[in-house]
Image (cartoon, rainbow, N blue to C red; front, side, top):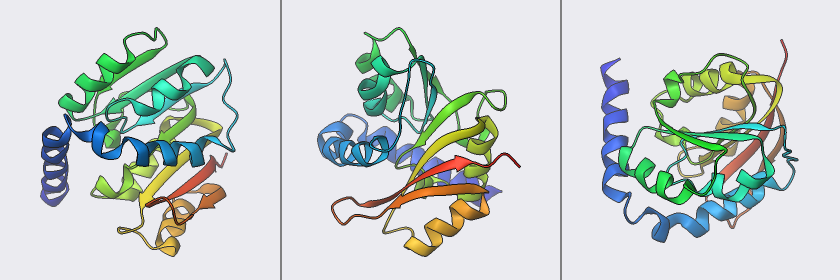
Length: 188
């Protein structure tokens, strides 16, 4: 248990330090991942979306006009300050400071969940995936990415299967640093 919190504390400190330069360092890379993630997904005015590990709010800006509501969750207050500033123009976006392993939502709430550049930061990815699964509706589309330097393609696919997600697509193209899985929550 202590190791889990040590890793979370280290990750939090890292994001607090890099919050002011995050967009200039990673925006293009994140947008490339979003392109891969959003291409096969049809969001609609009925979509209720969770952006787990939302960081500076780059994804909600792209999809806010297409969905009913988005909740961005992150545990770095400095990243969230940047997200709140970026997302002020949108009435259908809420930003919450919380731990993705302990989401403050009832089960089965979200039609879509995005966890982009999150999994490798979590001390136990299986716990994180279980929590994401808990808050997703039956048949929800879930997009998860994992840095290739932290996962092999095989270990990434196994993590999705072990969490009882039906993998629809796993994209491993060379021009992005992550594997991107588009999954469906299985009803069982």
